[in-house]
Length: 239
Image 1 (cartoon, rainbow, N blue to C red):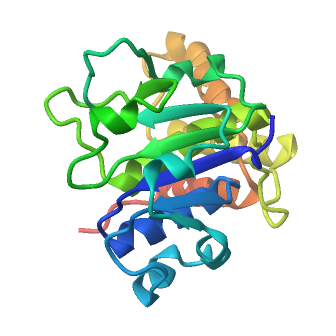
Image 2: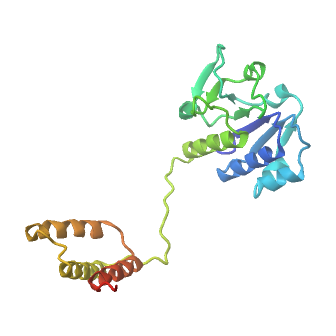
């Protein structure tokens, strides 16, 4: 599977802002192949570049066609996105079924215009139609929104690797000793305000407190903040 054999095809896009936003969405998820058919605004233009933000190169290398059929001739598999069910002898899939598609082929995802979507004639060129699950009473998605949902799902399928987020190196994890000092301060001051009542339940209450503090991955800063909070428990209230 590769990002390079996936293409996004915008058929008769109406707004420059949507074209630019689509390019930006593609770059967010490492895709770069954009095809545009009969765009209503002049292409490219300043507004498209402005809304594409850091994806200028995708706009620059995008292929533009005047004829719908000509733009589709070199693909192995075409998926037409549509929010409407078509009563045609055509395979219909939903977003979750993308994993069943062989993504090592040259695949094109066709998106219709903001005004009218894709016609039945245009859909007849596709291998299947794909629906993005959404509110049944409000199915119409913005062009760039629907494209970014497809991009994100494809990105996950191609990568198949979980992205892990590491803590900043500036965050120092609290040692067990530091947590114990904080705990001792907490217990000492809770004792002063007779928190552990009835006394026969003190042992289980302490056990619960330890579970809370030792289970969580506290930082040194967090233990200092909590120590300050616990220290304030023993202070007399000032009227």
